[in-house]
Length: 333
Image 1 (cartoon, one colour):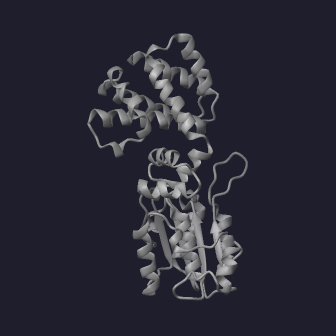
Image 2 (tube, helix red, strand yellow; image 1 turned 45 degrees about the vertical axis):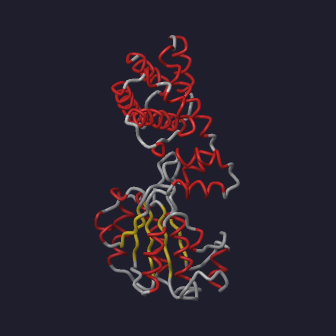
Image 3 (cartoon, helix red, strand yellow; image 1 turned 90 degrees about the vertical axis):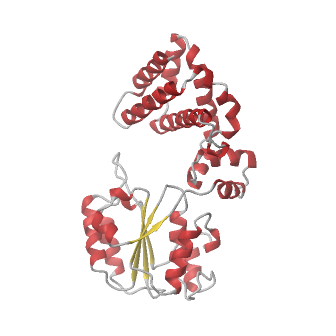
């Protein structure tokens, strides 16, 4: 684990000020709930806060004391990070066995620091048994332990757990900050600008798009919407077969790009500000589509995409689903 410091955090000044103030005034609660979109830095802030809480100095993390040095190795004996796990094909979740294990650990005296820190990354994935077990610990905390729960889906948590935590809200990252951070990863600025717009304020999503060739898939989606009105039936079956052969994750990504393009059309119809566009580099191509896509048609297409996304999460034949999808779009042409 690399050295952690508050300066590493991007675009979450309000949350950082709130946490540093709690530390300075010695009002840190025993449980915090970090809420906000995925990929905006919640885990990074939790890690920096943990390093600061475990540091020997009040203005930590100092990066020099034995605690900070242990933290940098990723082997600090007083820090526990709980993440969702899966067995076989089951969905990942935080299980009661993980809660029991950490409860046994925090019952002992700290090894290196004067307290323990437990981070739950993906706290909303706790099954019912795990959530109830954690709730009992939050209701009757023992020793110097601080819990940090991280979630992008607060509504999935028990209300009783939420009520026992101090909320720290995280927002989407501003595009300029996101572009700067991406360029800091040796990414060309032109690519960083496009990814920042597509990622909707999520640094994690922008990196994922870059690593998975997201711009290529976006361009393929734009090619599709340009050609769909004139597409002959053999081409429809061929495209349905190609899309049906994608993984569900890739297909969801393809549909998300289609949604962004359609929403950009609505922005152009409403004479919205250019910074509201997802596909700023492709605005001329999208503008040329407007004569073939009325506002009414765009709204109808968005509704179709939404229904397809809902069906995609079920155990459905993706090729047949894409055939139905493409035929519905042709009916609107």
